[in-house]
Length: 502
Image 1 (cartoon, rainbow, N blue to C red):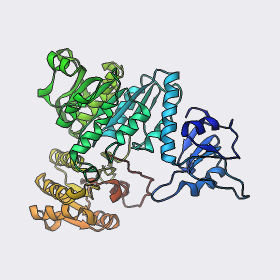
Image 2 (image 1 turned 90 degrees about the horizontal axis):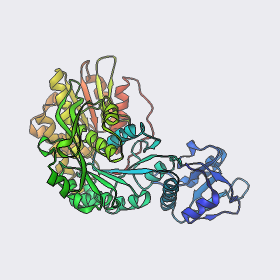
Image 3 (image 1 turned 135 degrees about the vertical axis):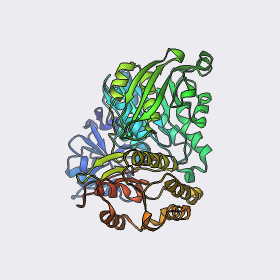
């Protein structure tokens, strides 16, 4: 974080200094986790669902925190007020401080801010784009899936004055979320990957999801660039909602190259196409990446290190965004060749010494990403002759569509000829019932009430050569189960995994 005085933080957040704060005291890091505190840290006492940051102020101070951002005064062991800035709402104050920091960085450096949103693929696209941009200058991108009203400020707080590229992942679970995040960081480039049914229960329908994702392109300036998925009708329609230019990406051969009239009508700067798409024996996307405007697009061969045909769209999106940011095709394709997942539990592959392959894709789940993962598993099984396992848990926040969507996935498992299905948790039971009704029964399908029961079953039934996919929303707990099975029979400690918005 850029170095800030206590008085500056107070002014930026609209807070009040306690009597024990020196206005000249400075901070150069910020965190909501007392375990990450050191000297010069601004400890943010954020209230949460399961813990209140105010309860950890003493620990943060003992670890060396210089200053605290809090909603109420606390005192030390001798009754003196802790040095703090008191605000009405800590999360809102984080947003105001992030906005101030972005403005300061822009004043100092020619910084490009790139926002990424979509119902699936955000983290993978973010990781790819950050890798490309890092070749051209200091780049800051979110850790894991920090993409909400807390995660975006935490990403900004890691930026320095010389940050050349600031990549921001933007999630939402209600209308107006993306608009708020965009007002905070003021993106120059906005990437919209897809509109799916993630969080449809909270949003009240897919059209409201599209409305919210489109808030990103509405926030772009006239000289900005909206990078849009030409293969998703709802995303393509967002071209009408932006003042900036439009750059398209696609995996559909019939879409590209764009004709001149199409380019002119969309004010398109260029296009990115993952054409002639196939996959390797290990299901890595392999294609010709065509970058450029219209028929002038040049072709570059790319073999990705990611697992799954569906990632080709994310790769094309990252390439289009990098082109919008000014990077040339040689740098882009050199980075993309062989690039795999860097964030955990996104089609994360582990090959155990006993010949069992684990694919852990249980950081998040919605119907679209669930189908994509299952299709990848089915292809891996067909191409290798190995037995496939789908270990599936609940897809959360689907609202009134919950039963219908889980039922559809159960049917899809059977029709894709997945060898074994293990459904975990009562919330996913309609998936199990659907698979049985579709004709899968006996030893082909099992139900486990919780991950511990599932682990015992897998340890009994998995055999050398099996490929096992773990997929669910993070709250269903299958990510930890996947890590456990990947390490073999011995238990492994679970990490601090925080699911962000879609």
